[in-house]
Length: 198
Image (cartoon, rainbow, N blue to C red):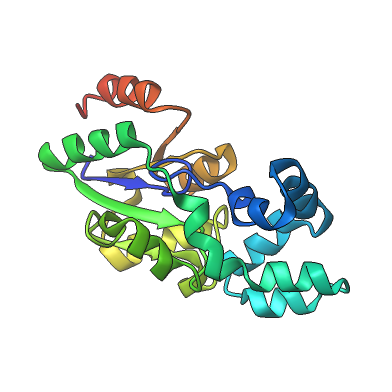
């Protein structure tokens, strides 16, 4: 094994989109209802693939919904306030063991700079960061993993990919990478120890 490739959202940094809207809408329950009403998950995935939130907001008929979604990039910092410290500790141990550390993240190109501003280590911890919104493809498309290997010169079998979504891990494995589904830092630590990486 030469490299460990991390997902970022909900592996290294908690992502809570409700936090972008709860102050305006009067609480978490109302914000959750708004996200369901506008099918935020599907729209956010399109942003992760390269669409702008302004364009996505244009599709909404309700003026209030339109304004809220259009404002999401300006409020994005609220959604990523918390790091997952145990994961960062494991990342540092892996790097200390001589493994290359990289990242492949489904993340909007529009909000990535804010993410790196809130958490400066996102800009320094990785040899390579593949940001889906900059590339125009998203996990679980196997092509994003193939692009990563071509870009870094790493063979897939020399990479361990860590992600909180089973479908993304399955896609990485389809191109020849090894993968671990992230649930919590202690479980990841045990998995890395079983693999002899810690």
